[in-house]
Length: 79
Image 1 (cartoon, rainbow, N blue to C red):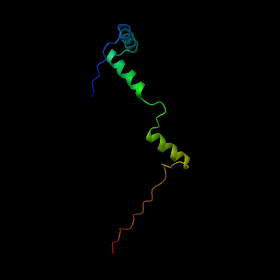
Image 2: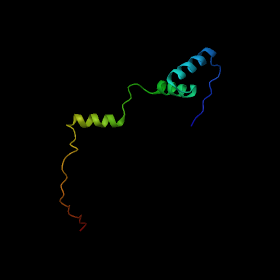
Image 3: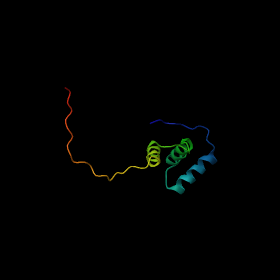
Image 4: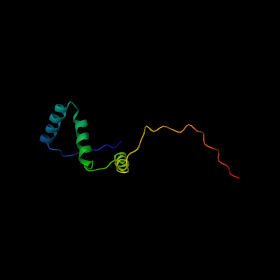
């Protein structure tokens, strides 16, 4: 995991971070991590699972409760 050092952070900014962290019940370091993570995550990012679910809905959906045919399949012949 990477380590980042922030130099020359104004005292007032550090104080505000400490207060914000205390209000959320976190350490200052944890609060800074959450702020940075939120800042770099794209807002409109489409996740693969969500995209696949949307495609499935548009294609008419998938019936996950269909009965499986219990008949055994014939073995493959290579002759």
